[in-house]
Image 1 (cartoon, rainbow, N blue to C red):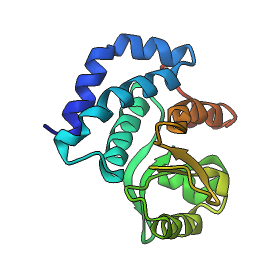
Image 2 (cartoon, rainbow, N blue to C red; image 1 turned 120 degrees about the horizontal axis):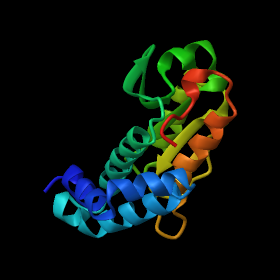
Image 3 (tube, rainbow, N blue to C red; image 1 turned 180 degrees about the vertical axis):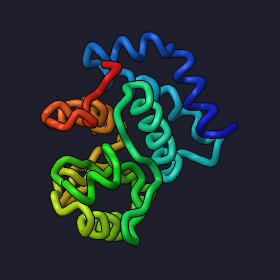
Amino acid sequence: MEITDLLYQAISDYQEKRILSDIAQGGSSDVIRTIFSHCVPNLDKVGGNTPETRGTLAEGLTHYMLTVALISSQRKTTLGTTDIDIAIPDARTLSSSPEDAVIICFSKTDQIQTIMEQVDKLKKIQPKSANVWIVADKPIPLDAKVYSLDGDQFTFANIINDLISFLSNKKQSKLKIFRI
């Protein structure tokens, strides 16, 4: 069984129409929390419940939620020599107007030094620290916005609501969210 199989089974159990309705009503946090917590107990079947598998699950769930909510994003791209997991809305906006773009990085390690190095690289292309979002296994102090996958401090659940809030303050029409 693969992580994507676990994820799509949890999504199917939750039901896509209900997901859309919940997102439209500001309940994306509940959707993310429910789907993620449904998958975590089964991660041992796909290689263990490690920072890497939880990070991969979070990345897959984020891709799905961005797609369902029709939030413009560019995934798995490179700007200069820096790899980017997700750029909202895209790398071109990140280059021309970094204040109007967010970078999301899924840190698939618990090594704080490695995560800090990732953040330093990202800040070379996104100088605004508030627009560098790191999804990490545990809450860690960084000069970036950190979303934790830790069960007790599961702030990752807020990522879509935070993106919606971020994008609602932008005047460019390409940053508008169409489905919700």
